[in-house]
Image (cartoon, rainbow, N blue to C red; front, side):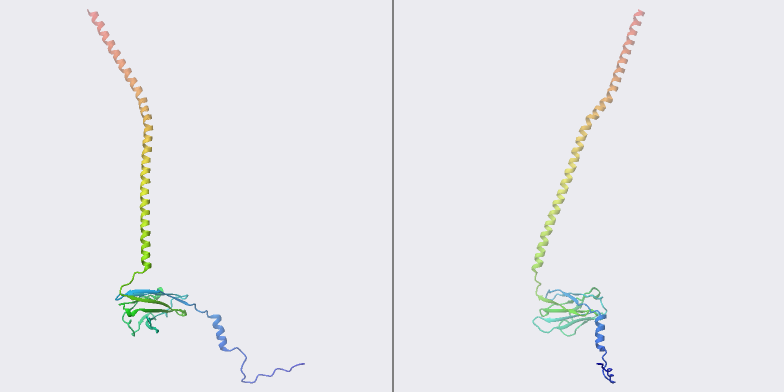
Length: 256
């Protein structure tokens, strides 16, 4: 059974083409790559003495180059408190210290965005500064990521950490061991060098003893012909004098 042609669409009826919003979402998912999460780093905790200063370090890792729109934000939550307040903000190359709170005249910016550093210094510490400080970094288009927190403990006198003491002890022991090893090798080297020098002297003395008789014999061999020549000369001289004396005696007899 054949069907007739499909009825024409009435004017003003909605089109069956894809929605513009759906097309935009599809384009963004295919063309635009999502930014990776930024990673922020701080110390877990820092200690400071009353009246001194402390540096709160903050650095980050980002898959993007450092942007001109990079920003750092520091927030403070007092010990035992629930709400965090903003105490410092860096944006557009300028640091901004919040005029509200107890830190407004005690914060110093010491960071450098070129080195991915957003550190600050808090001067003139007080017991009321105990609490948690949060560092938040935005490096557009890399703006997604978790913040990092550091806890500040203010004491009348900064306590010595067990790890620091243990590290100092281990370092001292290793230093003593290395010094002893160095002394051992120096003494051993000097002893070996002295033994080698003595060995060379003994060898030279033994060689001298062996060569001395040979030299004496050669000297004797050279002196023998000279001695014989001297003896012959003395004999001939004696014979001539005897002959001369005998001739003189005979001439005297003839004269008589």
